[in-house]
Length: 444
Image 1 (spheres, rainbow, N blue to C red):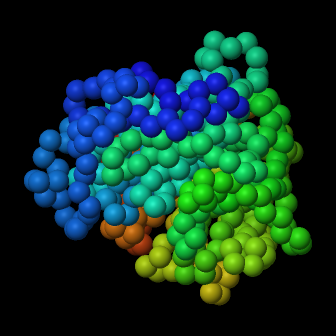
Image 2 (cartoon, rainbow, N blue to C red):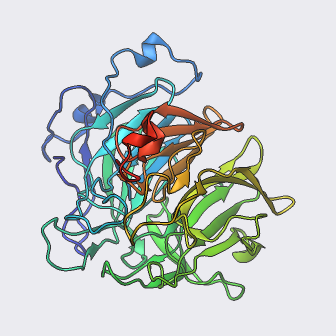
Image 3 (cartoon, rainbow, N blue to C red):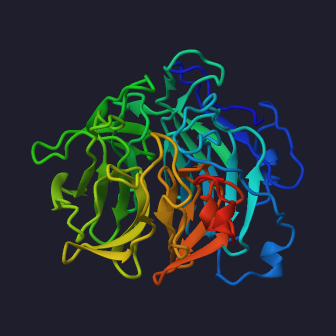
């Protein structure tokens, strides 16, 4: 278990920065020892020069990898070709059945996409949490919000967080950021992205309810400026998107815009829930919202969904959308779409699994619930999807499937999906068993 940076909420410990260590053996760093000497021993990875693996870069990296994980946060460092993953939950039940205790982790992992290898960061870091928001910019992974509840808690209520952390990827060190200004309220499942032009974080919406059975959708807009360490609330006057949680977001560098897709309102998990299918763009110079696409679900655009993955494929100048949870028969999805911001039109790249056989009960699905598309990753939501400018591809990791949390990793290179690390848990039975007769239900 990592030493925790997080302090009791709303007391805001000042200027806390502790060194972290990498390698096969764990190291411990006390508060007193955290300083220049400790930081110098971290083992910094070189700036990426090529996407071809070399012995100098890859030798010494082991075979460790994160376990099954969802509700985590992540960001991609384009200078080093690394995906940084923090927190999340391994305890998602299969086939939506009532599960055991909700468990959140305090782990930080780094995936080297050149060497196709994971390394766990050992040492002080944020305490266990999930459903937090993250974005990578200015050499750091920025982490805001999240929630936590003791695994044996008898209440449906969680503790919501409003603190901000920064992981300096050159030093491999977490910092607890002392932020001033009009800070956002504690929340989960907001939409956050890094603004390369202004060197700022942008945060839109989320869920302000601490009750795991109820939701309070938000429509507020904030920015954080690391230069002066302050949050600022912005209030565009008209044309605002409806309040939402579980939305997806990206920063479009070419158009200097925050782009937000989909999500849900307070009815997120009602049987009569209807999810957003709209796509919005916020001009960060004028702070004016524009709806790029209404979303119609007629086959020419994605059906409404929440907790999908959305990235800007900058080489092809298109937005890439994968997965999420819809309000139709399938639930979790694995279709892949692209959106052209010039023509403002969606295009289906791969349809993914197709619904085939009705559920046997509310949370019991037959083995042939879907016709499996083996060229696409497993159906999921609550995953992370990040575009790698380093190697010109999108990286997909983890998420919630119908068979629990999953631990696989995929790349979309513009032509289609390629598996990088196969799942060890969380896939439907028909996806990994050669003989479908061996499957008694969808997950076994």
